[in-house]
Image (cartoon, rainbow, N blue to C red; front, side, top):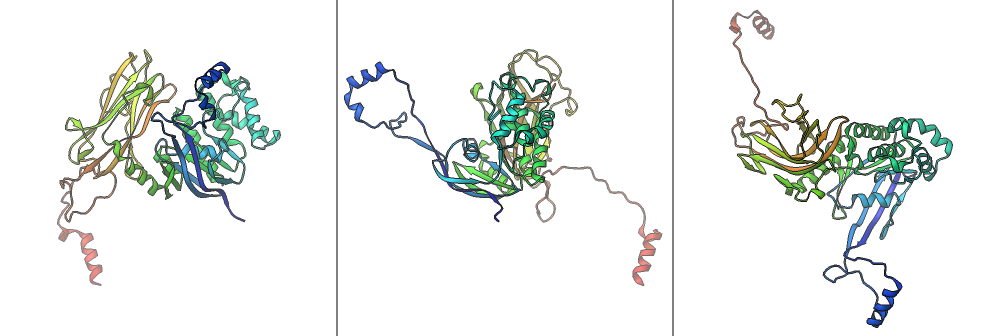
Length: 447
C-alpha cells in the first residue's frame, strides 16, 4: 500500500484579470442593444486596460508528492502561488487543469476563521467544523475542552464569533484545525500576526502533530521556523516549482533569489505598508559610513535603521526588533530595543508615544560578522500583551566582504556566522626543564 497522501499532477490555476464586471439593469441592456445591435451577436472577451484578453496563471504545471508523516514547508515571494495551492488542496477552489489527489481527513487554516459562520457561537462552530471533517459529535466532544483551553476563550465560547476580535478568531480557528483528528494539516501564513506567545504555542502544536505522524504543509516566511520544523521544503516562483528538497538548500536558494531587496526598503504608501491601524513601517535600511549600503567592510561598523509610524496616541512599551539571518536562513542573532537588551538608555520605551514618525537605530560593531551574505527581518512589537504590530520578513539583505585584516596565515576561510575579536592572553608559567610533570612525561616517552 502506497504511503503517498498528496499527489499533484500538472496542477494549474488561471484567473482573469483586467476585466471589470457590471450588473446592468434591464433598461441599460435594452438601451445598449438598440444603440449597437451588433453587440448582441458578439462573444464578450475578457479585456485588460490595453484592450487585450488577459489572464494570469497563479499555478502552472505543478507536480509533486507528499508522503504520510512528512512536514513540508512551502515558501516563495508574495504571488508565487503558495496560497492558491493550499486552497486547491483544501477544495476551496478548483484547478483550471490537472488534478490533486488527497488521501485522509484534512484540517486547514488558510485564513482567519476559514469555515466559521459568524452567527454561530464558538461552540457551535467547533462542532460544525468537526462535522464538515466527517467526525461524529462524540469525537468532537472528546476534544472540545482541550480546544477551548488551547484557544484561551472559555469565557466567550458561547458568544457568536462575529463578535470575536481577530485574535480570538485566530486562536479558535487554529485550535479546531490542530486538535480535531485529521491526518493532514494545511497552515497558511496566518500565524504571522497576533500575539507572539500564541505563535510559539501554535508552532509547538505543529511540532507535536508532526511527531504523531500527521502530515503537515506549512506556508511561512519565517525561515528559522521552517528550518526547525520542516525537513523538506518546496520553493515556488511565478506559479511553478523552482526547487524541491532539503529545507536548508531550498531556503538558501530562496534568500539568494531575493537579494534584490538589498540595503533599503521604503514603503511609500502607508496603507500598503506592513502593520495595522496602530503601527505601520515606513522604511528600513542598512547604513555604513553614513550612507545606505548593500556591501559592508568587515572591519567597519554597520547600522540598521527602522522608521515606523505610530497612530495610537499615548502608546507605550513599543520596541523594534530585528532578526539577522545567515545565507542558510538560520538566525544569527536578534536585537530588541527593550531596556534590558539595550546597552544604551532607552528614551521612549515606557513613555507615552505621541502620534508620529519614529526612527530606531541599532549598530552592529566592526569585526563582528564573518564575510558572507546576510538578511534582516524587521519587527515592531508592543508589550501588554506581547503583540507583533508590524513585520517585514527578509526586508533587507547585505554582504560583508573581507578586507584581509583578520585572515589567518594561508588565507583559509573562517568558519561560522560571526567573526569576533575576542580577548586572548598567553602567560609564561615557568621553565619546562624544571617542571616535574614534564620530566615524568619525558621519562615515559623514553621507555
